[in-house]
Amino acid sequence: YNLPTFPDDVRRVRSEDHGRWPPTTAATKLTHNLRDISKIQPMNHEQQPPVDVLQLWTDVADGLVKYKTVVWTKAVDSLQHAHNYLHTSTEARSFVDKYMAQIVSILLAQYSEILDEKEKEYVENALYCSLQIVKDDLEAKCDEDAAGDEREVCVTLCALVPIFNERAELRRKLRLFFRSIHGFTELATYMIVRVSSPQFPQMDVVISLLKVMRKSIPAPIINDSQDQDNGKVEKLHDIRDEAIQISNAVMNHVIGLTEENIEEIDLNIIRQIRWQLFRLYLRLSDSNTQLMSTLFIFWRNLALKLVRSQSLPLKLYGWNKIVDIVFDSKNLYLSPPRSYIVAGAGTDFINGRYEFNPQAKIMKNGQLKLSTEPIYHRRIHADDLSNDETDGKTFSLFNCDLTSLRTKRWYLSEADKMQPGTERDIDYYQHKSELNEQGLPPTSGWLTMDAGADPPPTLDPVSLNVPAGVENIFEHQLAKWAVENRVIELVFAEPVNSEIVSKATELITFLASRIRDREDPAILPEGDPSQLPKDAMMLNQFCIKAWKTCSDTSDEELSAQISQLLVSVVPALPDALAILLFQTIRDSLVLSDECKNDDISGFCRNIDVLCDINMENVTLAELSRQIKMMVS
Image (cartoon, rainbow, N blue to C red; front, side, top):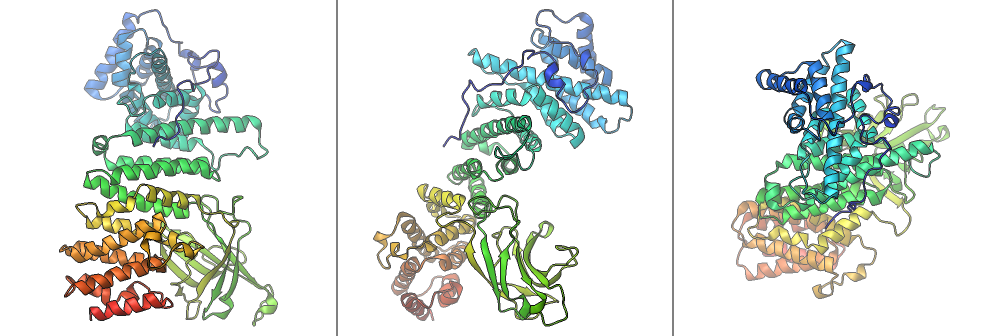
């Protein structure tokens, strides 16, 4: 699958003085003061460098080789002359390719220690000149591509890594300058035509680019519908277009890598690229689910490439990513209930209806915008209280992420009148959740805090904010992708690995819940697997395969993991599929004299409890009873 790409004729819009350093019209738009700009000479396309310039490059190179340092004034002069003769002198080309990134790194390392303003000017001008060299180099490479020449690598790109990883204040200046000279546009063009080729930028450069593109975009980006300054809106959309072109090039390149290519890359690099893309798209999309869908397509297809590989480390990493995809698909754009009914709390006034916070950021389809937490409130008027309260009370249902502890805490609390949402709130009940659990209030498992009284309450969601028929698009796409690519069949591909079985639990449970929650149960006829829909039939075959593998294997660790998978998955199964699985288990026990291992025996003896059997279904209850008797 190829993500959207841009044709070769999608190139930069050049100003009249494009190619000179720096463009006057662009420089005047910069919000910072570029000092001594006039000292930088435009590129010389005819003359060769004089002897004194050649000697300057030799002196700077010798200093870097021998002493790993460079004099500030010589650094600026050497880069300015290198830019001037970049396309006419092999010495200039050799100098920037070998030494520019090193010069930049040294100057940046010393920048924070410089107190003298004049010395800072030298350093900043050297950095501006370096960016201009990169931009001109990119432009030359793109022009060569257009002319049909063999594509070359832009070696000077490596200088962008230290420049764009510099501290915030200087990085912002450099970023603004690079954009003013159309550097990012040239870079996007360069990357697009080098996707899936050895000339594509190195991964450390890619990570730095994704970081700087994210920091270029306000959060959230301005929508067309808002009444904003037209010039500002146009500028923001130019930034957005550059970010989309660069990120699409990155995603297409990564997807196009062969298994051998990926094995040569540290998986931590892939992890960083995925994380930086996610953070970039959080800025880009806000309420644009269609744009975020592009990123999810990339995630799913990268995960599929990995789990289909022959390398066990890549397979395990791919299944890890599928766990992340399941969580993000369920939680990125939540569809919160309109209210929750809290009942059964020992502190009686906590019980009642909690309404969704009307000030929360909700999209037109009723889903929460990104990075928006659901909050619910219940207001009790003074007349309804038994004490002397005159202003009434407000109770809140909300969560707090404790990232350092990898937990999420939900609270039922009385908000402080002066400082709500602080330690001055009175907490009655709490729920300790994992960070990777769904971002909506849990319905059970609450704990009583000091201000509350046992028993803790249960919660019951009431209707949704989303209109009827609207569903989470990412959940739908994930389920469709898993079925069309028969992903769950890869779990028991030989040789079966217990770690893969463990990591697959999230996806299997997700698919089971999707089938169970369908509004029309008639599509799941009991007792006839041939009449099942494609996804239900595939899940049924998986569960039966899981049981047979568990009962046949002599690997205790594998047997234990499959048993645990069934314990997690069976409660999510619709009754029709649970019946088919239990019939298979019963029939296999009839043909076997005894259970082969303790995991199977323990699973069968406690099948009704472990699997949370729906005892209202007579068939399921009877099958459960028969299985328990056969292993007693």
